[in-house]
Length: 425
Image (tube, rainbow, N blue to C red; front, side):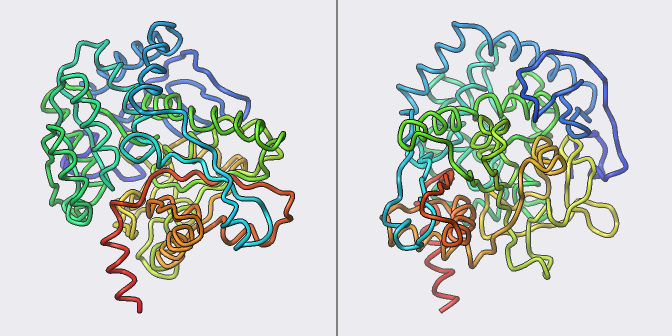
């Protein structure tokens, strides 16, 4: 299996490879300091082979020059409005609120973004960076397929060759998204290595990048070596830029809590970004606890992980007894990742964000509940966040407010949920 240190072994928690300290300015808040080389406190950095580091340095230079460039910003926001269809609504879920009792529940409707998830927010930004760098081919990994679909679409829009790497298990359970990617001209590579899920897709995508250093890697989550976590944060923060303004317009005040699911953490970092300095707003990230924390069948990195090196970054990760990256499990193809973004690791240790979990059963029940009360079919990933809201809302007062980030729609999950419910009956 390929690993980011260029050897035949996976990274373990004792294998730092590349950690050049390099000062640069980044947009931050007091709660999320970025020090040198993209560190969030002690988390982050860039642990990669030298050929990749040179590409990352070039990417960082382009990103820093672009994110404050009025022409780039205007083009990005024009695409968000006219191609992605933003802004997305902040919807008061009146029927769900009445059903649960307690706090008023609002849904940030990223499921209504073009292609059905938040992923396009980040992909459009990265594709524009790729074009500025003169790239003609893009490579991406995908779990549930939503990032792959977004990358395939943006590559089609800009006339770029596109190769998507997806674990064979994920490809089987997300056949609809595989076909969508292929329909838009992408080549989808099913990865059979290891557990044939997201971590293996990441390894395969980085291996493909090593074999074509002229390509551009469109990384889908807030993970990986610097500057990717900062890039993904920058392009996903639109979620909370909008929701913060929307809740002030609708309620005249900020929410009491914002809840989002966490795998690698892109939708959650976008949902949390503009509330981090608002100490009275609770931020809750919900991981996949699968079949339960008393079993090995989970992806609860924050609850069960320890600090180490994974996919070019220092962060929390799940390791087995031999110090190897552990196999993980979730009903959700988008949450079965053994690590987490370094900014989330920092937010956990700083105490600013509370990280909890939802089991497969809880997520499926939440999906069914929202479908039956509001006629909204959420992605199984987003349903983990909904499950936490369903637990909390009845114990809160009617004058309190929860925002749940519905990161994607659940069309892709219908057959899987149908089968799951049939087996559980």
